[in-house]
Image (cartoon, rainbow, N blue to C red; front, side):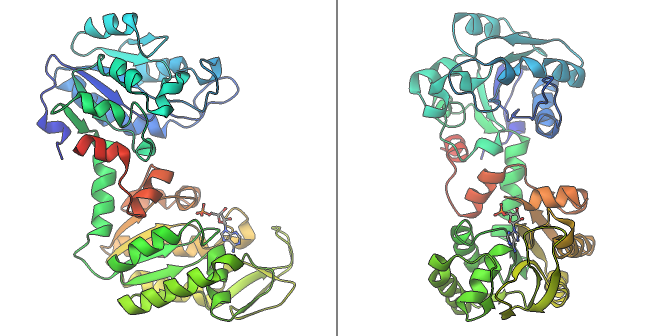
Length: 396
Ligand code: AMP
């Protein structure tokens, strides 16, 4: 893997694929600049080492060509404020004017291209489109982890035009490094906490993780499918009947591999899927027929905590209850608190993929764990053990 600090940017144009897919309000103002801020170190590095920068990104999901509300123009002011200089803008991302403007860039200058997805060829992975984009830079830098699982023109296809002159930006490199710290850890025990709504969306993640971990804590909606598969009465809880067999085979595979699976022992149940519903706590195996489990019970919270506190490496993917409703958020909050405490004691903790990042931010854990992944879908696919096109293209 070529690191960004191994390439010489002096007098060169860095064509950087960033993920500037930020939320905008109805006045087209940025409401959360996390993704822009994440890319700052990479951009700054090029500027500080004598290069110029051509920025390309997508924003939203435009359907048929240019749409004002998805224009990257709305980001100019923010970028000028961050870098303290003028940011040149082009109302298209390819073509003669783009080539002319990018060739004329002086060291320290920044050129922002218009939304890549105004061209259908971007998501289609168009060869000709990728070739046109490639003309705008001397070195290709991919720093868009959020789209690394897509084989798009700017995230993957383009890389073939830069044989030696390509690298990951700091966001990408850090994501890859941190997942590596979990998946190839030499510290033990390694604990994965997999929650969220459905078993079906996490089967591949769990199967890929099993050979690499010592403990698997299962929570959230999917825990009811596991427990049902093992004979529990789960009432109206979320159970995927068609995946009972899958759940049983995961339990069996875990046994074979010597992984301890921790299923919830008790459950906080509700009569309605509503915050003000009547609730009761029961053993996991005896949920009444009118009740649905929406959070792990108090006994499980204590058990989960003790597993987490004895772990050296912790991966958290998916909430263990319906954390969006305060009545059913306690299991997820206590889990997050335990991870924070274990991190304070020296464990390495990574929160990534799905709603666990939202939960970690909402309850204030994000700053206190070792690493929070920025790429939801991409992180999930990475944990599934898939080769991400955006990563492979730079490595090959
Ligand atoms: P995911 O995107 O797969 O991480 O799933 C997150 C969603 O799972 C959140 O919206 C939670 O509200 C939901 N969830 C967690 N526990 C349960 C449960 N016991 N029943 C239904 N949904 C749940």
